[in-house]
Image (cartoon, rainbow, N blue to C red):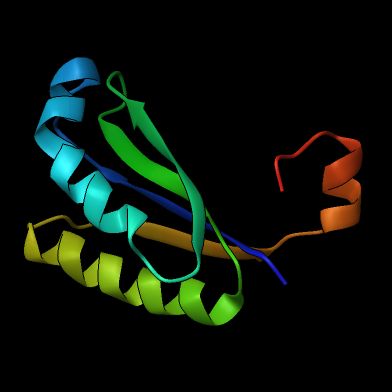
Length: 100
């Protein structure tokens, strides 16, 4: 069953195009993760928060990645990390046009 993973954490920037430039290498690394179907990058400059919404093919790969990514963020000095995992109801999601 596909698994949705959500990360949200304090972030002081950069934002927008500068974020893209600074984190493209990280994006390429994340794109190579086993079981990753897609990731949506999130940023909120007003609240100084960033993160992402990930869709994984299964719970095992999502859990493995969550542990790895949390450790990576902590190695950057990030605290206050919020991570949540959800099972995806594919049938209802198809009705509402989710790209599954």
